[in-house]
Image 1 (tube, rainbow, N blue to C red):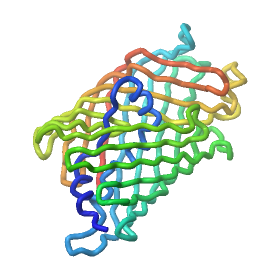
Image 2: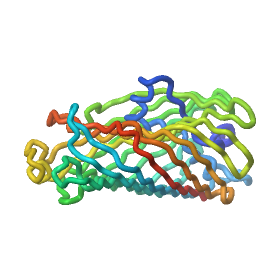
Image 3: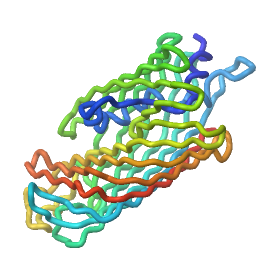
Length: 323
């Protein structure tokens, strides 16, 4: 089975677009699932010019963001003021062990830190996810690529680590390459700890012209303008979501005992603009800024749901590399 048709298309920027408010809401839950099927794994691995299998490729990405002052509300009541710092890093090694299959192994880390003005505010000081990446890319036909990944790891506040913090989210994505410029995408996210344990979504990638691209890769759907080979401007959203378990004293320390060891579904929606600078053919730097119109802290099983709609400003810096 020949990977060349997919390699040409996958070398293009990653992709996905959400249509309408409902699709955005679904996309928040399935962001990673849809990204799985569209990351350019095969563009750096796969078949070499000599026709032999290229054994390894490496992908690294990291980013950090600062979000300004915002309020957190319980119903109509403000229960705290906070600022937020987020960080993430991912390293994945890909090994093409046969023509139709690429094995993917790696490690992923995400952190959300909340600096509150009142220690009784029912927000964790920080939430971390440290997980393995175990999965693969499967080319089913000359136009259909499927990615399946499991992310076993610890998802919690890390004040104490127990077996209850362990979780194994599963993400499945598929891309159908109608042409180099038009790709249909479907994704599925499975997380038994989440309030929505199974969530599907669909999307599309469309290169409208040589300069304009609808490139809605979750968790960062974008409209892009390619200014040059080195510089791309974009406007879009950044959809963050994760499910965590807080520690056994979290609720008691804040006067809400029912939140001890509770499961927290965290959502965050950002909107902004920025640029991507290709430092080299393999290394890219991103800078963006904008506003965060909505965040949700949902302790659903404890019937305790907080939100923030303060339109807080943010700035983000990201770095990615593929070898």
